[in-house]
Image 1 (tube, rainbow, N blue to C red):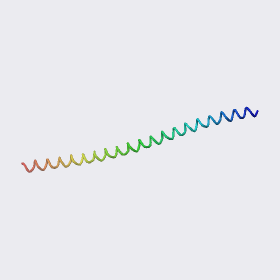
Image 2 (cartoon, rainbow, N blue to C red; image 1 turned 90 degrees about the vertical axis):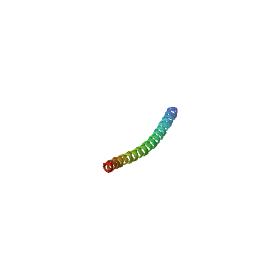
Image 3 (spheres, rainbow, N blue to C red; image 1 turned 60 degrees about the vertical axis):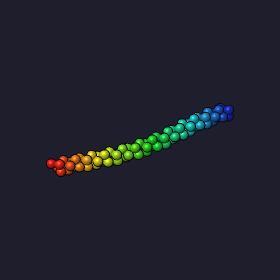
Length: 73
């Protein structure tokens, strides 16, 4: 009986170690995904800023061209 309990305890301890290892691995993967998400958020904000800057510059160029055409006429 005692030997069976020791064996069962050993098996459960090994199982606990494997599960803890898996949990640590998943937590590491979650941290990596969070970093990747934050990097993507940063890049998206940068692209949005550039998009709106480009849109503003296009509008300004269109207005400048219109004004130049009117002056020329």
